[in-house]
Amino acid sequence: MKRLFTYFVVLLLPVMHVFAVGNVLYVSTDGTGDGSSWANASSLTAAADAARAMEVKPEIWVKKGTYVFTDSINFDYLLIYGGFNGDETTLTERNWATNVTIFDGNGMYSLLRNSVGGTRNTTSVPSILDGVIVQNGLSPLANNGGAMIINNGAIVRNCIFRNNTTQNSKHGAAIHCNFSTNIYIENCLFTNNTSSGNGGAIQIGGGTTVTVRSCTFVNNSAVKGGAICVAVDGLTGSSLNLYNSIAYNNLHGGTAYESYSQNSGLNKGGIIISKHSAVESTSTKFTTDGNDVNHLVLSRTVVPGFVAPATVIGKGTNETDITAINNASYRLLKTSPCVDKGLNSEATVENIPYDLDHTTRIFADYVDMGAYECVYSPDQLFEYPSDANFKAHIVDNELKVFGASKGEKIQLFDVQGKVLKTVIVSEDDEVATFSLLYKGVYLVAAQNKVIKVNY
Image 1 (cartoon, rainbow, N blue to C red):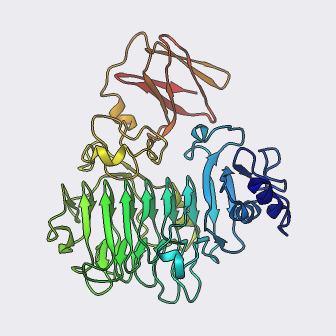
Image 2: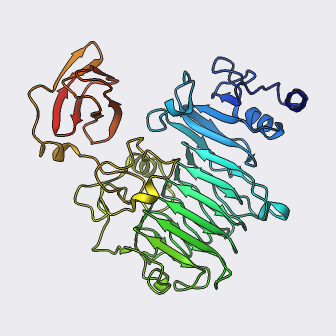
Image 3: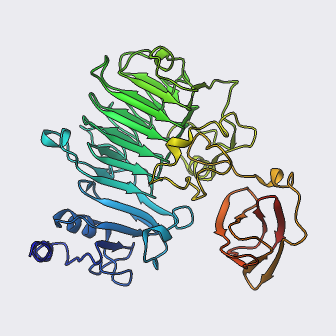
């Protein structure tokens, strides 16, 4: 009876009739249906309104495409997953790297906002954003949070935040973490966000504990805390747990490359723990608390070694900037000091088995720092000998790969070294098939075998 009552409430919603089937609501850019299937996908706004009204909160599966926001969406109790092609039947089938899902604030709106104040600060309000690019957000005039403001119980995972801003000296260009107990941010890239106040990527509100795992912060800008800023000093203030993450080339105060700060100074803040992370900051918070493990201090000379970083810092202001920001690569070179320096126990968390490229999170024996696992770039691939039995053949637009053994992982790379697709062979001599979407040079590799393919 409770479930029937839930659906009756949804029928009364003024936006449209939306139904969850198998506890999933389906969303597409042109969705006008009831959300019961990919063929009957609803709009994102309708799905969000319907999901909050349901007693059993459904997952919201969002098909690839760009969703331009015309207002902020209440993030309370929403479980949003991007990266779908539109034919999947299980969550594990999605791929956020190939099925790009973009939430765009159009330079006018903060996109997703948890309710703040009152019991929201002490009661967990489960909210998930997973597998989405969040861009061009703008904070309200009187509130923090350029792209998002999140509260107790929120999880942000497998996302890219770029070109988000605050106005009127407000804080947290990408995310403002409101007063709360536990917030988790995992496997995300924060790049080219600008705060007119503090926290070029993330601002941590007073009394908040934020755990950041396997994230990369680069080219963000703020008055204080080029990447991350905390709000309250002392042991009762905000806390940051930073694991397997990289923060570099983030601008503090317009002149200093300081990725971390507290509102009142570089060396202030609550409990700041860095484990197996690399941060460009002179703050003593990473050395004096005694809780840090294998913390790497980055500088103008000790660099993380990104494949193709953008030179733009902060929000792009013209088409040339935006193109450079969107085409940059923050994958790691093989020579990076951040390769194989992560903490495996923080990478085997149940919900982050893949990196931001949707590649297996631990490529070799040890996980890398940052949002991307270092795999072989094109030049480095040829350091490994090929196997005469490992062969590739093109039929029409399909690349068929022969000669792999059971359990081997075969990966298709573009000429820039980006992993396009991964196939794990289930039987000896199984043929792995890849669709080639455009003419050009590809590389296909499996363990110590590699083939260069011209299509």
